[in-house]
Length: 347
Image (cartoon, rainbow, N blue to C red; front, top):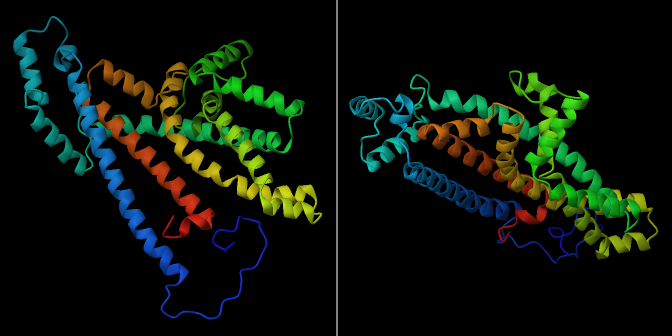
């Protein structure tokens, strides 16, 4: 087994070599040569995904029946007033022209102007809601990691006893419960017991800690059971590896085997799992925000869709897509840093 593929915590020495080949590239140069193409591929994928998001949202929004000018002015507005407002908002332009103006604005960092509130830009409407949603997702992620890792370690080390079966049954129940339904149950509990405010918000996420933990707990049911089940399976597979069996055969204490050999190798897949699951948390947060009356991107999106506010919907979709891509990139980077096996050009 080479050093590059040796599991974390495994002990051993590589076979001696007869000499160094001056023409052979160093491990650092091989890693760098594989990193640049990977970054180029990542940038190309990101550009393609963002373009696809813009095209799909633009097409779907213009396919939805309804006239934003008519919704703004009301049913009693005259056709002349509706036509004048459509011209003012640029809705009478060809779709190709509207799409071109949208793309040009995005290249300049301008998400456009709200059709409903024409005095506010999309940036002013979306970013405060986005900050609130990210605060909720961050709190839910912290709760999910604490619960998922704790339950995963306990059920992975214990072998089919009462605690293992009980925790597994609980994780199955939570995994099959939609976050909004669990949120409504927690909302009723909060109303009856007063353990937390039953919805609402108070400024920024840092100022709303007493409001945020209950919806974050509701949202965590989407990720905590997945982490627990995946870590449990990873721990049991690691226990079956040869280097773990060799450590046990040498008489090492079980606690040392678990802490030094099993857990470091078992936690590696969880890093990627968490990064790739954050997109689902952002989607689930939109529904939980409505249940708990949190002014996030979920409630902002629903209001924008109802009023046919195309720029706001497009801005939220684009910001959400960029966030998911950034989370996935961070997960890849963390995995690359932690696991040496992913640093070779072949990986």
